[in-house]
Image 1: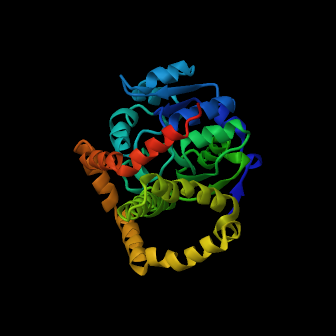
Image 2: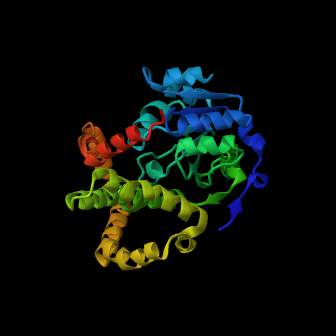
Image 3: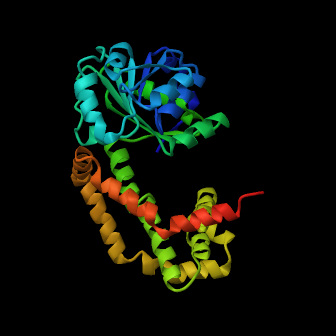
Length: 328
């Protein structure tokens, strides 16, 4: 796979465009700030009336407008609203107002991959997906670094969509560390699978299960918290720095032997079968169908899940440890 860097991008392409960022949350604010610091002068934030982000955007020095007005003004509209809201926003506010030959950009492929949005044929449609949260995107940029991004082109109506995507990625800081080409489908499916089967689904559940097992056996919640949660960051940092194989050289023989004895008893053949089932649900659209249904119902499943997580005893242990370790 080829990796693209700043030398492969034309910074002038994105600097000469009028950019509208739709949303000012996890990705919207960091992307807007990075673009401005990279020399993009005509940049505005598009938010719904009454949005909580409007005041912060104005405090950061940006003009704020509604999505329909932004669509009529911008050369590039960057869709950073939540996935489940994008179809309605595009249908009702963007499609009737986007300028001919404008570009529609995404940071996640879901709306295109599952045909929630079917862009007008005259538009360029591209993806630039930083591989990390917006806070990290901004922090790394300020350190003269960046996050790796994936990019893809869905429609190249003007002939410049690919070059514009690379220019956009470079302005976010990704050109400093690498930009990799993918497709909307590959980015979306891999991301949705990872969120469920590894990162946000499996790891927190594994931490909860380990914590519960120790506490049920009579261990103090504080010790259980330190063992099952605090050390997760340590191993994540080691794996990021050294890879999984070399990470083992940085831990004790006892810890490595424990991994040998325990790992495949937790991640069993049944676990891998379930992972494949999750991937099938991602690819056949049933996960997205459930997501949209929960959103339309007012997020009852998400709200219930948040309440359960907040009530778990591990949160009380965390609060007690935080208070204990505060410096006088």
